[in-house]
Image: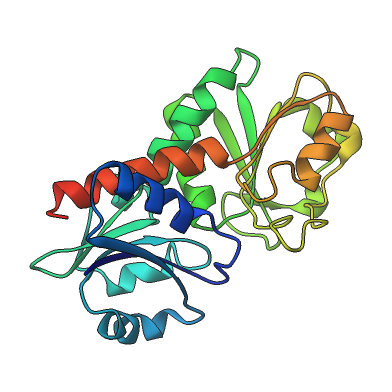
Length: 246
């Protein structure tokens, strides 16, 4: 049997196996199995491939969207520009990396964007944040990365003020805080600066309404979760695997 899968740590909360099981059945591909693989250390990737004979593609999630690249032979042009990968496919040359987060995020966000969303705060600095930054810059939106540690082009959470929040009316949470089962988790930002003009996006999709979203709604902000992005990036992943001989 041909295998597809999800690599990440942890992966118990993921809805990807359920989604792909339905998608594969709908196109008559009962010969393909989709599995979740909890991979704590990217150095164990080669062993995972050996253990799962017949595997030809993976989705890649936290925390491996950047570290997986050392295991790849090449990158799609967009993945190379982003500097992060969330979909890989086995080719004759080796494993090739793609980034379908860009596809999913840009298409899920566009219906919510208004003219006032000229500047954005991106909370987190991992692979998902890189894809979000790439999308927003391409849409002409000025971005600032907020991280736990200082660095070039980044600010730390302690630097945020209520006044600053008022200047950045698009806020995107790219951290895993609030993901099931630790649903009370939430980024520490000056919530007093969030109001009804804000669009607050949480890439977390399980639970459907995160603590981040609840706090934003309490301030009158428009909110959205990552479920549409998940669906759209997953559909694009399946297209890539089919284009590569699935």
